[in-house]
Length: 116
Length: 110
View (cartoon, rainbow over the protein chains, first blue to last red):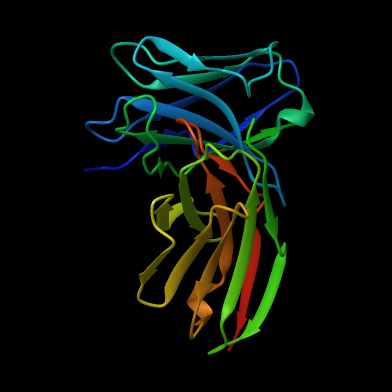
């Protein structure tokens, strides 16, 4: 089992460009979470998805940010018109849990986004 | 929503000493309390978790205690080793989205 795979590991963008972050969950997991981590801060929840469904996006900014988890392929976190404040580590996690029950999260290695 | 407070933010100990990290949570409906360890530049990894029907859980040198009445839970590491140096995050979950504390940077001096 390859674990949760995220790519790229590092992404550099200029202000105004788009950033696309990819996450493939562990085999057998159908639930994906995206978290953002800033230096000296914890993991801030952004969005929770199942295949073809956004279950909870309460932690994601309403503008410029979007997420999807299509029937085929990885989950994508998309940030349009990036600004310097978007610079952070973005972690994806997956779990096999059914909605309504907490299970352990398995994290990917993260994508470090740097906006110049 | 859930709010998780974690203390201390930094903890420095000598090798062989014990380390204790404490967290409090606000939502009495929370019933799952995992702890994650994140080494520098690496992914967070689950080290131990506890559910609300259990007051204490131990795994070798690490243990977690839970006080549901007071809404706090703690991580205990005994006989610390330099490789325990990392950032530790507590989390509390009531439905399906764990809320994380801000983390504790543990430094173990040889």
